[in-house]
Length: 146
Image: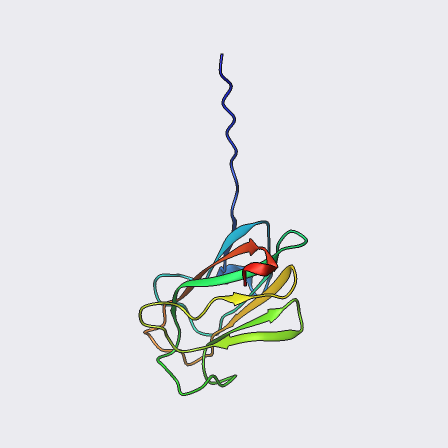
C-alpha cells in the first residue's frame, strides 16, 4: 500500500478594499498577491492602501508587478498630484517609487534587504479614468538570488 502525501501551500492575499478604510494589510509567508481596489477595472479616487509583507527569517522579499497602470505617464512622480506606489524596506529606507504606466510589463522587480517590506499605494482626488491600478506578487527568496 502506497501512501500519498499532499502538501498545500497557502498564498497570502492582499486585496485592498475601500470598506477597509485606511487599514494596513499584513501579509506573511513565502508568497502572496497585492491588488488595488476594483482591479482590473478603474480604481476610485482618494484611496490609500498599505501592505506590510513579512517573509521567513533569512529570506528577503522579492516584489514583482504583473500589471501596472496608474495616471497616464507623468514626467516624474509628485506626491499629491500623481497616483503613486512607494516601496520601503521595513518602515524606513525607500527602495522604489513608481507612477505612470508600464505598457507591456510592470516596473522592475524590487528586493528588500531584510525579511520585511512596506508597499503603499496612494490615489489623489483627481484621478484619471485610465488607471487600472496594479497586481503584484511577492515571494521569499534567498538574499544571494538578488
